[in-house]
Image (tube, rainbow, N blue to C red; front, top):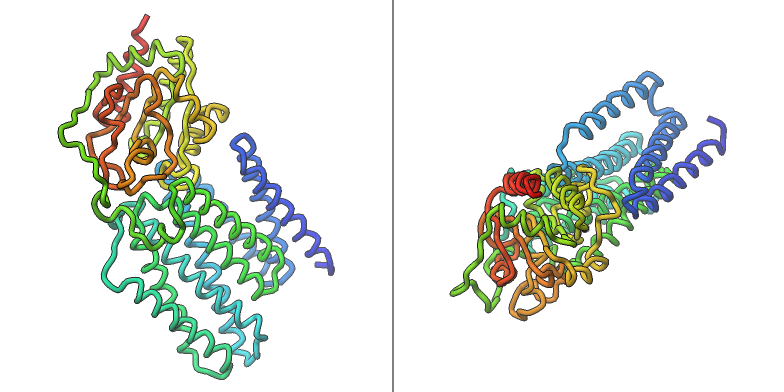
Length: 464
């Protein structure tokens, strides 16, 4: 490839990344933004492989065919309810790639007896550390989301001290390798092994409901690791793309932490959700709930002028998103208006509810962020809460002793009436009772969300 051509094509790929990321900021342009970013990545991969003469043309073609086939299969086979797991796994793949490339570059230099520059040596060590932490941390997140291991925080005495000791050992070994180039290979393998262990220990104390923040943060780690790898192999487009992923992941993590009124440090080290109510003074003792049947609930929905649907993780578990859209269509045919209120941390990954409802072809303009929809609850005839809990709990406003006090919530309790679809009276991730369920204007429709919604749809169809 002629000198300068690769740099020009890399620049085009970088522009595709930036424009694609910009278009991902709005649901209406997200699909085209994703495609534009994919085109940029394809261009970057092809240019790198051809420019560096790493592989033969046959191997390049074979790799692209196999990789594309796997990607297409995953995109079509993975259910929307399993999308958080897949995102966690893809983050892990990114970390593994950075670990392998950084490790291969280090071993190559050792094999040929090349003395690496100081900046290259430092970035290799960072690539090993961040890539390994991202790999095993993402695998733990995947296991928690897939329920291969407990989703609750796993802690033991001295965990944080152990993490600090492992990190200091990694730093010491990395400094030794950089300062003593003729050293044996065992410090390299020790850094890799300790980093892999550190990734596990950093994620196991994080509860399942904090996974949106963790996935976003691990995504950021994978981007930072990729940027470090870009410095190692002197690849400009890898540096740019890694920096974009790293910075956007950090920003998104901070946005979600603010939505929970918690710091990133508290999410990572607080083992939130691992115990009881954390000092909350309010309990359900002496309170009762009002149950409602599908017939009465359908009657309320059928004659409502405004219904605001609040989806939660229970909707994803029940895979009832298509029934939600069908229910909304029936309400609108009867002259009602339907809005969907999306809390930033509803679900198990950033934008989980948006993706779930988009799969059911719910129009983008009916999805409202918390700040945009909270003022509408006061004029809503019905707030229909499906599988959500802590994000609609008024204790966040009223109970200073609650672990979620100060957390911004959806104002479902401001609606004229509230219908909650839940399997039972189990508490949310925070481990506290939900005051909304005992509100006199709240009706509980117990059962699997999919079955309950099917009954509501059936009853609405019979209304004249």
